[in-house]
Image 1: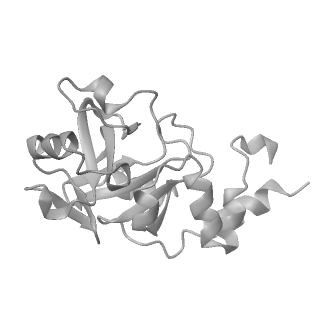
Image 2: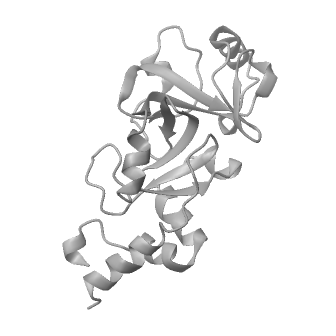
Length: 199
């Protein structure tokens, strides 16, 4: 049986040269995070400044569709995701529609957040939006000024650049797959059991 202390030492060493949080990076929860909202979560950072940080959890699928959650929403065969514990009564979306939605903000190359909601509904009604072009979230993940920095000092998050193809795809194994793709010690982290006492 592997020595748990050695594994923790190896795990801690991957934080030595972490990227800094910024729009367009992914936050991967450390493998033993106990928070139910963020346990093995993959968060796309959409905003980051000295005032705080915002992002969406990419791998928490809900059992309803946007049409079931929002009044007067066009029929659209897409899944609603739990974006995080803040403002869960509100609908948020990221997409690849660019300037087709006035007011949208580019958060990484080819991926945008928000934009005119009425225009979006019109595009959905006439079938001009594919499920691969948009993702909907109930709520978002938010950190106040300095909060994320403090959590990073505690080795709560692994940071890696986001890839458009991963961000826009529904993938329940996203956390594990990203770590596996990073290789090396990250790949070892991907295989850690959720309960550290089983390691």
